[in-house]
Length: 409
Image 1: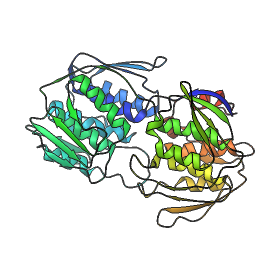
Image 2: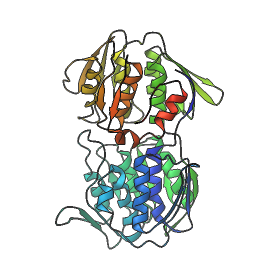
Image 3: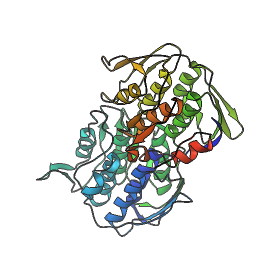
Image 4: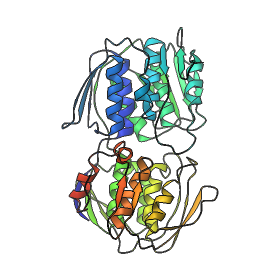
């Protein structure tokens, strides 16, 4: 592979920003570099169903949201069941209307993803969290008051939700053991433009001082570090020499270090980052953990690289207990992967990968299938592309621009 491609805007930053637009009772929220991935498009439809005016220019990737006149606090079940980030609408609805109702949430099936710390945080702020007959949760508050909150796990959606609920609460709030992901820093940058008083984003302790109201603001979404990781691995697994615009290396320190350990050259090249794969990849040891550690979302992809590396690689998943479903797919390509034990797998390389017919079980497992297909001999078919489309926009067009042979049927 060779050529140049651009990283898309961050899905995981755009989603909480779209939810935050509900907090503005004056003006419009204008977001640039909003990627047209499925989860984002569904989130915009949620906003419309709540009564917001949403104008999305898909070519310019700019969204304009006017939520000043909304009155609805019930989230549409048929949409929230399609993506996990629907949880992010609870915080702003609770903050603005003192009530939010949600039924089922969807998303990737990768293991236990508890939501109780969202609801415990809302309760600390003064809300009542009640089950609804037939399923669903009703979150109601007479008033919201600043509180001290703690996340059992540093979840970025949990922190974003609690920050949005706290922005319009009376007094000061603190979130301990907060996630420190770059997407949270970018999300908070928008909130501050809207008039929120939030400090500590990017650290384990976030402080929020409640304000009377927020207004619309304009912001450009950061580049997607996970999309960047996929493109970087595409160059690496094919022994390619590619240039990528939009790779923020400060967001990918550990991931880049692991690629370099595998023999991949990563270097600045003007406005781009150049990625050059070696003739033979070296084996790797990876342990996933919360940011700034190795991202769990890039674990399936680097496992695909390990399949053709010259030796045994050890990969341990510590974040999600079921994020190893892609192993079955990689074996279909001919990879030699030992049975998982205590969330540790050993990948025995190098394997000669052969084209296969596989199904993308979730976004990142789908990305691993794409990478294996790029390195495999023969024709590969990847089904259930909806999952891949939830996280990566125009992926076949961008990979074709780098020299890959693929088409969507």
